[in-house]
Length: 580
Image (cartoon, rainbow, N blue to C red; front, top):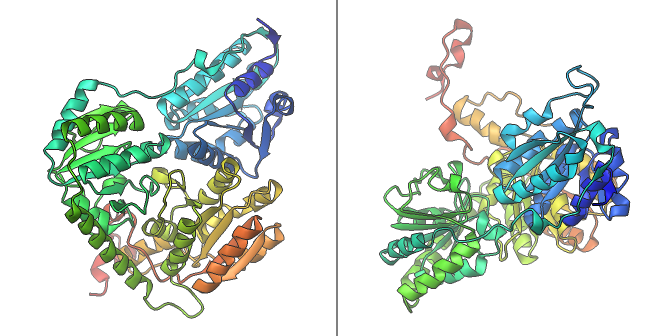
């Protein structure tokens, strides 16, 4: 076995794993490893805030399937990753965070930048590993990649800063020697049961999720839908899980999703859920439609056994890779149900429901607005068409406008949609856009960001300029935290506390940072700005002046209630005093 230092051993693990870049902010704690990156062929992407590095690698992994890698200074550098790692954990994104910690000899002395990040990250990772000795550095890093891929999520590797130094004898192993590629169909007998359920279905509907995207299973799901004459709904914020130009596409479910998808799903007697955990929030009633039928039989496919029947009882659960299972199920369905033929009534029903839905959202977008401002839906109409037309990657934040984009983002291909998903943090879309652009340098990337989230993102414009990442940020300037403002409208009698956001000009700030800035308030100007930004291939910020009084429905109606007050000084705030 060749002799090497722990830093050299870790660098070689990264090389064997095909890691071509690592993101973060440099620090003395890992400088010995950092010094090896150029010779190892690994680029270091230096960001302005570590949370950005985490979101970048999350998006990079979703685009490429290769686990992203982050690193930072011990203590505050690593704690800055907490939000991004929690987001990746709930998004099932494999990622490795190399986390230097205080020197082994000084642990417990509350020294400079000491923090027990190993324990801190345990609840938000698939595993929080610790290098117990310098000679184990490579082994623990290999274990991190094995767990990240197998369990679909981030893994932290805690290494005392003095453990990068020393000597060890280490074999350089190929990934195939210490981890296996995920896949397989699980228990074959369960497929027979699934086919029996599908054969008896009168109104089957397919729900297509993230697993379909990650496993490149779209073509197989299309074939299943056509054979079963089953409309297809995409899971919440996975709008690229089925092609929007297919006549059985009904759109996404979940908050601000497609009413067409929800009405059709509401009538299903059998639901074939492929590559989805059927998350609690992603299946809650929306628009007063309790669309997930309690009487429908569910056939659920998910690679993680913990997610089978986690939120909805199933008739059959298939613990398997989405594509492998879909291929097997398609073969068995074709054998059991040969040549069923196209049911034109189903196709006509899907078309009619979609047309009704499109008319409804078009009418909402025509509501009157403040002078000099656009209805946010009018802006999303333009951005949505641009994304579809140019096969662009769209990244979305959380908030009033970003969430409403769920009604407008339509994709013909997979791996085009990158959303913050269930963790729901602001300050995600632009940072994720940078990672998506790193992964797909020739593609057009559009970030959809409210002005609240943009305040948590704009400092990364210089990063985009420095690395020539031509992400187009569409920033919706409505002057408020509008998702929360809607709660204050509906539940607190228009008492606005902390809702307003002041700005001068985000477009001008972008220009000062070296990007191209545009300020628009009409659909025509927005379309022109998008086209110009796409052609320039330079970082761009399009500030869209939208009307902050045009608010979407409450995001968490289930979690709020009209206020009750008991103390005399607060009595006037009680719901009893609301105007009738």
